[in-house]
Amino acid sequence: MEEGTSKSPSNCAGTDYGDTDPFQWDTREDCQVRQILDRVADKWSLLVIALLENRRLRFTELRREIDGVSQRMLTVTLRSLERDGLVKRTVHPVVPPRVEYELTPLGGTLHATIRSLVTWTEAHQEEIAVAREDYDRRAARAV
Image (cartoon, helix red, strand yellow):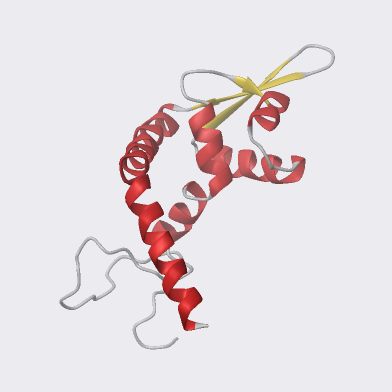
């Protein structure tokens, strides 16, 4: 084993960052914190979590509400969120089977964080639009 590596591939604790920010997570691909951030911060997961706030939705309802998501991508996203304990899947014993999805209490806590991110985005969208226009102008002159 290479010096400085962990025996557990998903263990990222104990990494020596020297004088860097103590709140900076490990950016290695096998770090659990990075894996969780990759999962919850992808666009489909964010939209599913936002839609499930305080309500249950069926797969077809979620798919109808999320513009551009494929059936396969929504299935993968829901399974991953369920595996991570953020979404609960309930199958009702009727014919045909009715399946509903809802946030777990853990998923609800994540929704509050996502709401903060959306609030920040709304507050700064004009500044970002101006920055993009400035960048595009500079890039066009450089060509």
